[in-house]
Image 1 (cartoon, rainbow over the protein chains, first blue to last red):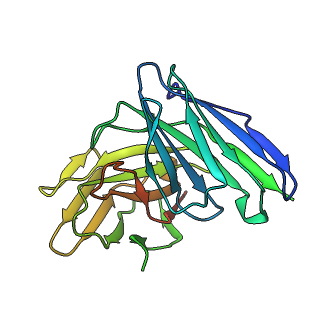
Image 2 (cartoon, rainbow over the protein chains, first blue to last red):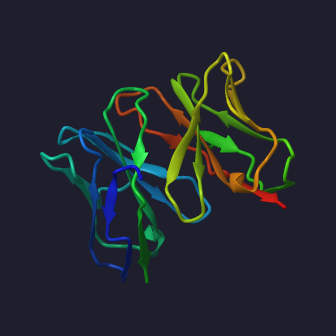
Image 3 (tube, chains in turn orange, yellow):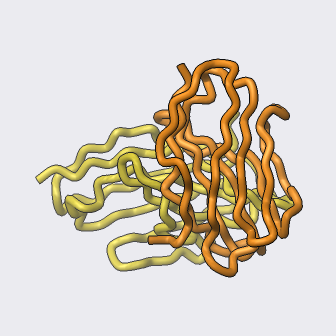
Length: 113
Length: 111
């Protein structure tokens, strides 16, 4: 176990709805990053938070937004859901720094109908 | 062109076989390189880092060729438990130093 937890484990939504996914980082880790993994693909970087500030963003539209809290847990919010948003959403925590190992949570599987 | 490209596979090999995976990356300023393993419907887990000098961890050997922007993973004496998807991962230059994944190569080791 990595010590990184995510909730919920599975979620079904319909197009146009909004969703919030949650991640609790490993104790002491101050950096959380979020990834989207479509079926048959590698994870794609969405954004990263370091000490409550977003410090990097991938090629995702603004309807993907996030937060990091003082305890370093994090949320990913997706508005106006589209069918293509169906994927496994992974969060990873780390201590920051260029090569520090990222520890992934088990993911949230989102299905958009 | 994708930032990280891998053999898509699938690779189906018998137990005891040696199998090699290849990966190329497009950003010559990339800083760090890894192989991750992902079991079906599970999260990715770090298998090993990859260094220019090459590195070995038991049955696994990883190599990096910066001039060719090429990364490899060699698995010797394959076990049934090696069946998984192997993801080539690069950290490009930049402040976030996010992980950039290839699409993965699926390996099935057959009895």
